[in-house]
Image 1: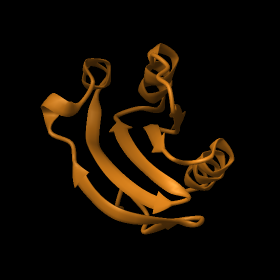
Image 2: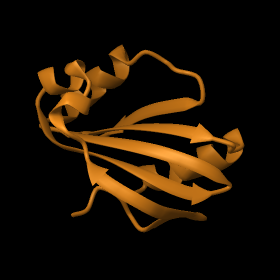
Image 3: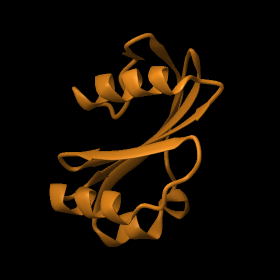
Length: 105
């Protein structure tokens, strides 16, 4: 199953790639990782989305608990996936709608 759907609500996938081990945060690698990728979505602004598939839901939850907040970024986990969404030129409401749609998948 691909990490990134072609569309999420009104957002369209522009590019995606696997993350190299050096690009993956140490706290994610330490908790057991299956795969990781990064993608760019275009819509009401630009979103850079990183998805980390961990070996357990508990690991994904722990990453969310220890994640340091950053401006214009939201992070969440669902099951064994930990997701970080960075936005540029997007309204928070549009980003929230993207996150809600992505969480359903």
